[in-house]
Length: 595
Image (cartoon, rainbow, N blue to C red; front, side, top):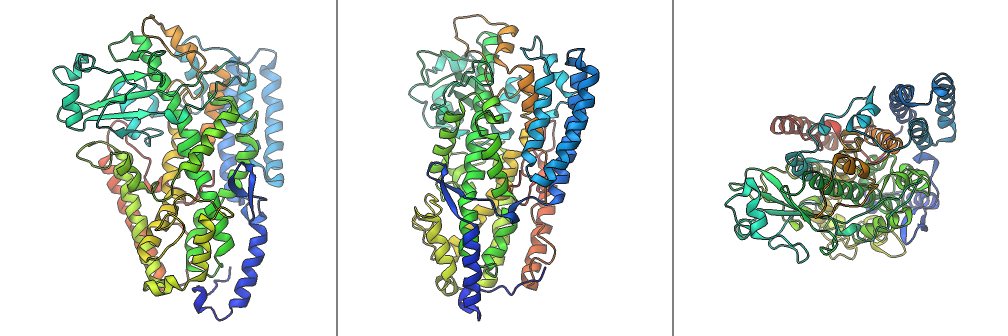
């Protein structure tokens, strides 16, 4: 591919041709505000946004692994009349769909179909014991992170190093609707002799509050009643701030209907209460942390970038590799995964309508400036390592944020030696205006004034860092655990199939199992999670060959990649242990949201 001369619009000698090419691009990248009510998405997917053969190849490899596992499971669980015919017929169908997928450009159909295979030929119904879920992993293997999943230690660790470590926040007072007392707090063995007031004073209390899920309505797809809750869970650091431990769980926002559960409650009731929190965390993960704050957040930014920056603009050149595949995967997610009867409706606890509303509400309230990684940590009162010593999501994330910021800073200063060049950049002004405009990207709180203006290089660097970090590190840290942890339904029962426990009752293992997904839906959760979290296409820092022609840029890029290698060693070293946190390992961070 011929490398174009990169320059700012005010220095382009052929500005007429530049504008003509931009106008052509604007006809391809048009906003649609009706597909997701009031949120800008692409009107029609341009051909260039469809995946490359290598991406399809990687997806096919995952499909083959799932196929092997599906066949092994079906041979153990399918009805005897199907044991010979079904695997043979299914192999033929899968081969046909693999080839069809390449021509009709609908890879989502492939992994949805592979997931539905087990769903169809696994006997529907409840598990009678934990081992029934384990038998769904005959060829894949249960992820290491799911071992000892039901301990209180692991339950607390998941809040800071699990599939959704974005909810935990420090508190200075107990929520009004959370009936915890000193006597309850000090009765827990690890806090014997401790006081609630002292823990508050020393900033040792944390909560995960899932109030954002309050608008969800109980789902009933595909065939069975499900239950959604918006729990609050209280955690505390032991004295000396050595360990984070769970203190109490309120299964919903209404304390009159749902009594408080603690580690001293009925053992199975406590385990069921933890399942309510894990389920809420799974729904929050998929609808808010993942869909709303990465996929939907970026799409209007991508559209605006194509519409307002020439392909000769340095910011276009910097951002475009981080946008590969996002418009495509978002389109097919809307068409298949989050459509009525799709994977989201089957697996999550809420109705598809209420799930979409919760996600859309989170997207609209996701303020650009406040959602920057360091700012979000500050707002949740978890940025200070002295207050929360073990929080690898924070510590590793800040390392990657800083590396991306330094790379962006060195890159931008090559083309913007002073604010003068920035202020005279007409394409940058149009981009900023369209992003924040109601007739454009509708990005909330973008710009130094929150209304779309960029007047300084320092803010431009922060804004671009935020966009690239979201497209790469943030999405990967949230997306990859779908395979690392979330494929195991007993650990993350995304759908709950029985009511939350009540304190005055006694419960059993049978009651806990009744809350968990049926085996066929647990297998669908396995297949979708394994696919969505298992495809790594192009790693952070790996721009296309000869993408940058300026030697100064390539020098800065080489430095960035070398720093990523050093960060890999640092993160691996400090996260060594029984269950190392891998969310921000550079080797696992994709260059863009392409799955």
